[in-house]
Image (cartoon, rainbow, N blue to C red; front, side, top):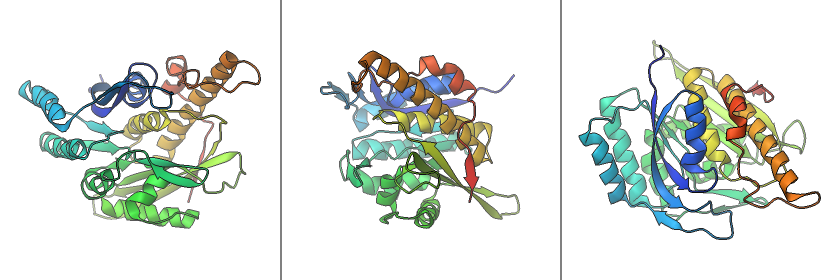
Amino acid sequence: MEAECRVLSIQSHVVRGYVGNRAAAFPLQVLGFEIDAVNSVQFSNHTGYPHWKGQVLSSSELQELYEGLRLNQVTKYDYVLTGYTRDTSFLAMVVDIVRELRQQNPRLVYVCDPVMGDKWNGEGSMYVPEDLLPVYKEKVVPVADIITPNQFEAELLTGRRIQTQEEALEVMDELHAMGPDTVVITSSDLPSPRGSDYLIALGSQRTRAPDGSVTTQRIRLDVRRVDAVFVGTGDLFAAMLLAWTHKHPNNLKVACEKTLSAMHHVLQRTIRCAQAQAGEGCRPSAAQLELRMVQSKRDIESPELVVRATLL
């Protein structure tokens, strides 16, 4: 019988839709993980809708929840997964929790999606308070094992622009030097060899041998664009990467191929369903573009590989 693998996921939560913990919990459970979820925010729906209501968890409330777990001696985790956060003290508290959990399990793996912003029409902008950036740079990334920034977030963390694949590899080396052994730039605006219909993702994984030597595997993945704006894809990506790197710990190529192939199937199913609901010639609404997660269970569990990585 396979040993239980438990994840503490500290992310946003919505009542309706699939972002944050709702985007992470289902795929992790399908792939055999136990997940304990702490909601950094609790909203009626994601902020891609015209309106939303809800609450933001404070650092003292996070501390209170964690204290309850600790008093009951149920804080032995194999993984910590974090995503969207809006408060600097909350983010610093997450780092304290990771450090304390590592005292119980030195092999704990921290997967961090440093959600800060993105690029639209070539211009990047932050959608969290700017004072979160130094906390990510100085406290969070140094304790993370796996990070999944998009291109804009990788640029923010290193203070460097990425305009070529070579520059992206140099940025990933700088991120490695900050702490994480696995870095995946989940999306970029770099040109794909396969043409303008494709987006580029890049990955780099450092593996240490018993003799202390380090080898680095670098990969590029060309992913077909989908003409729609989805919310929650980064949360889904980070959760599935956690699962597939667990199952393929020293093979980032296979882990990313399975993660992005599953993403492809989820997004294709989502856009087909959304367009059918919207009707011919109409652009789907935010509600119609909610990720079709449950309907994609088999693709998440055992994805047909349609995205292949190129070793660099």
